[in-house]
Image (tube, rainbow, N blue to C red):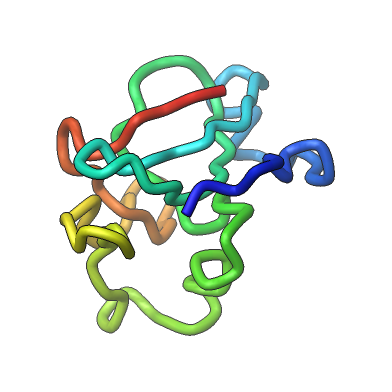
Length: 114
């Protein structure tokens, strides 16, 4: 379900070496399922360019997804699916240059809004 009020005003951008490596700019994106339109998450996108992967440490809501990095390791991280229609959104991966857990997005699986 889509939240009536986005929580992005209550969150602060994470400013760390990853943001600096991508040019120092960040923005919050509200991601929804492209199949059914259901709200998926609030995500901090660092830098410009296409959204290819979702780093677990950049997910701000919902709480079930925020805790993924603590609950799972790279071997047990499940696929990311829409809770409403069960469409595959992303598959787990480790972004090797930074050794960060992430989901590789399926093309066309999400709708972004600022």
